[in-house]
Image (cartoon, rainbow, N blue to C red; front, side):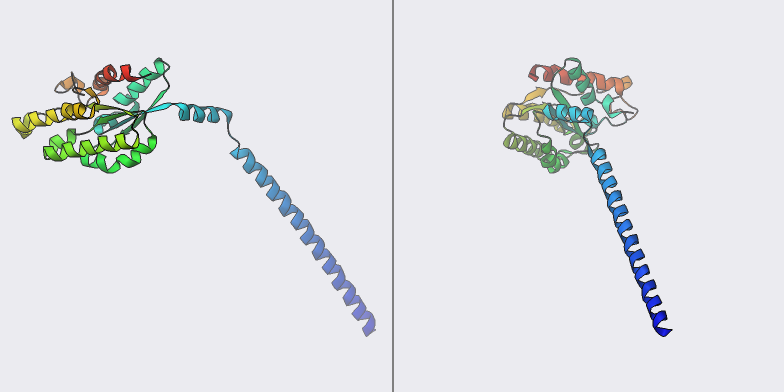
Length: 245
């Protein structure tokens, strides 16, 4: 009787063992199937969308125009950054089917010192044309003229050394006579002096026909409205268009 019970228990144990092995086996198959399904989904989700591929290739093949500046470039106070003059320039370029893409690297409140500190990072864009629009905040804050000129020269030199074939455009700037006539006059002269010294393309005054005109400026009297940026774009385009090939 004991022997029969023992045999019965062994038989039951063997049955449970076989059952567990079958369960493990089925679970393993299920796990592998799920993993394969997930992998297939991952491959599908990572497949390159033909349109995206075309857009990426197109952007990579385009030459870059980097606008490096302050709130004027950034389009401070506008509803859409594309309403700022660099965005308007892009529209002009697109209408002529030219192979350029505009990169807006404007930062509101930027000074020449701030620009000097971030120029290396911005140059990762590998510009074909580099438009330098900085200095206005220096003038409004009364930064020593020598310091502003040195910072701008450092930016220019950095671009030239890293990309010798890059064409550079310098935007001239003027300020109200709040800091005194001598400071105002010398500030204005910084820009043509740097342009001549470094053989740069030059925009005599970015805010020409906008500065001091109330209906083309926001309530602060400093930052152009959407309509004001249209005029800025025209001032820039007059110099930039002949450079484009």
